[in-house]
Image (tube, rainbow, N blue to C red; front, side, top):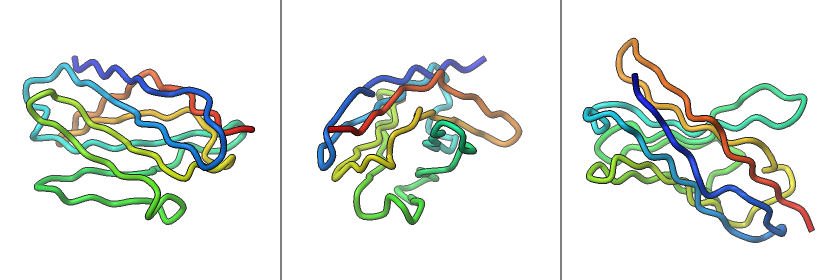
Amino acid sequence: QVQLVESGGGLVQPGGSLRLSCAASTSIFSAGVMDWYRQAPGKERELVASYISGGSTNYADSVKGRFTISRDNAKRTVYLQMNSLKPEDTAVYYCNWRHYTLTYWGQGTQVTVSS
């Protein structure tokens, strides 16, 4: 069983920044793929960013140029730096770790962008 613990959410004004963290309990953290998803009220969960391996990353079009995903394998932690936040970024953000057929989710952290 892999535990993922997220932190860093909160209330921020439009144009502001937040950094989310997701710490994993698995010793094979570096072998897996880390994703950040988000789910806004009344909407489906959507993939925001992925850290695949060797520094390879992917982003949803809606966050390109504003969000940056990074990971620290020594700390078994993935980060999501979110800049130039917009009200439409308001959602619960979830991290996901996957390795072959294994997949685990964090509990989610609320991000609210509002003036």
